[in-house]
Image 1: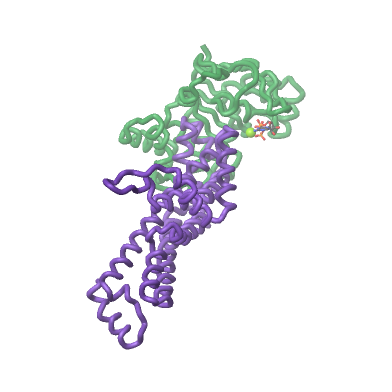
Image 2: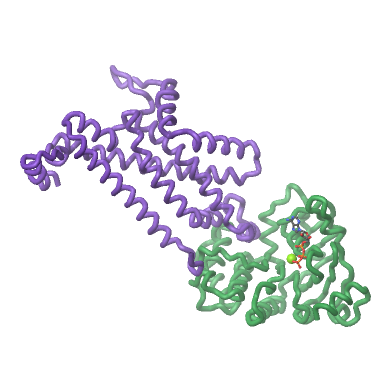
Length: 248
Length: 242
Ligand SMILES: Nc1ncnc2c1ncn2[C@@H]1O[C@H](COP(=O)(O)OP(=O)(O)OP(=O)(O)O)[C@@H](O)[C@H]1O
Ligand SMILES: [Mg+2]
């Protein structure tokens, strides 16, 4: 791949001065590829964590315990009503200060890396929205359908897992798509706690090479492509899971 | 011993007392119909029998097992008691066959192959052979209701509860559903039916109960109740619906 595009971008630079160094310089190219990998991992794990939190939180919201419901409500309010940037900083610098350091043979590293903090923080942030999204999906599932399952000996948890959740998930998908796309974009904030994802990486590249406009363009395109892919994937899922005979 | 014994059942929703001391017995293989005006508590009564509603006072026993017991194993009760609702309530994301197979496979953990054989036989029995892989959204109301009946039967219940199962159907498909229930009754299934189909009640019931405002006003064999009702309220109700 690299050897294929390198001459092209080298010539572009020589002839026009447009410096896409990440496409012709081996060192910068490797930095760029690793930035992509870290960004994709960050997006993947944050989304996964936010979904797990969403499912469990929505399940708690249907529980009979007022205390548990109150705790989840507090969590939702807190994380929906504060900027994700502040949350990241709070997790990394606030909570990070209290986590133990591990002896790595001579030098010390924090038990939880900035990458792990970013996943935690972003997952929890996105999860707060997912709880609400799944909860309204669950509310839209007819109570009588769940009741039919209970009459067929399904336990409360089985009813949730086999009936309510699959139906609520389908109902929630459009809103979920919006939130997950938004979460994917928000992962770029991990830049402030030095997670070497795309934004952070390109920022380093343009600091070293003074080619801000070119790298900005790459950064833009990167997010356009990622977001389009996620949205397309979820729309495909939406179509695939559409309930036969219930056209929407 | 009766299969289902309902004794002096009281049930309230908040301040509203819906059942005010209802008692009746259903013997093995018996078909019992409950009729009465809207709001008289028929659905509530039938839902109490499989524990969907709890009761405040009285006793309901299914095969000797007290339903009004805080330590009751609901799963054991519901294995014995099948229920079919007015709004079929099929699982819309599962095919007809999957609807029927789901509870025995997922809940009772029975071997899938065995359940599938039984499910296919049940679907054929409710005259829906060929519709196994069709989703509920593509079935008519009557067809969905028959899948719901097959789904309940797949759990091999000892008694079946039917709550106005034809009320939401158009007249064309009512017949198919009633036919299915009639066959079931003829095979000796114990049935408790809430229905507005008086002709049907008269035909299949061994015993008919007329309820009004939370009490059983009058009961008896269908011939007697439908032709020689003693209570004025029963007479008025019957003259309105027939
Ligand atoms: N979950 C509930 N909460 C509060 N009130 C209820 C509830 N379920 C039923 N009721 C009330 O209890 C009364 C009896 O209702 P029920 O559904 O048992 O009547 P029904 O005889 O089945 O009527 P229908 O023929 O219209 O189905 C009604 O006044 C109804 O509004
Ligand atoms: Mg009713």
